Amino acid sequence: MQKGNLIKFGTESMTTGAATLHHKVVWESSTGNLEDLSHIKTRERVVWDSAPIEFGAPIEYQRSAFHNGLGTNGANSGFASDDHSIVPPEFKYQLATDGESKVWKMKQQYEMQIDGGDWVPIPDAVFEITRWFERKGKDLIAYTAKRRVAGVEGTMHRAMVKVPGWFK
Image (cartoon, rainbow, N blue to C red):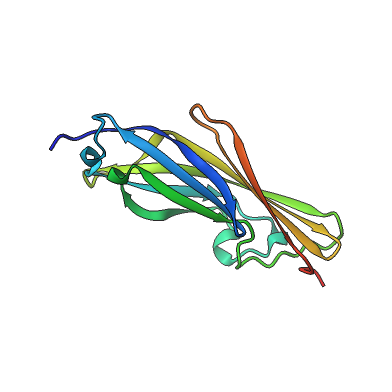
């Protein structure tokens, strides 16, 4: 079997579901046959600075850190799905005054592993994830936005959720 290279990484769609921003990424094989990518695995690596204290974040987000998500996917599928909760359930938002808002940004890099070697960045596969929360009276307004910051796509997709009565 011929070995292909992962090429033309991009976004097929970004949509909003039930309190989720759903991102489907796609790619092709340099040979034109996705089966020629069976020696490659893909994943995401998300890096962040500590979340604003007002987010009431779980311990792993209270400091600068990273995680490797999406599991490990065989590249011969030609796609991966990446969901982002708009209101992560572990967070205990504590915005004290009406109109107060906070923003938190993360960097997401999609990576590949070729023949079991080291994980390396997929070229031009860098995204910025922005989380923004605001207090409107007793309601929590939450936004999650994602945009590609490397490569040809710069369009941002934004999803919003209103949680009535979050603040007592």
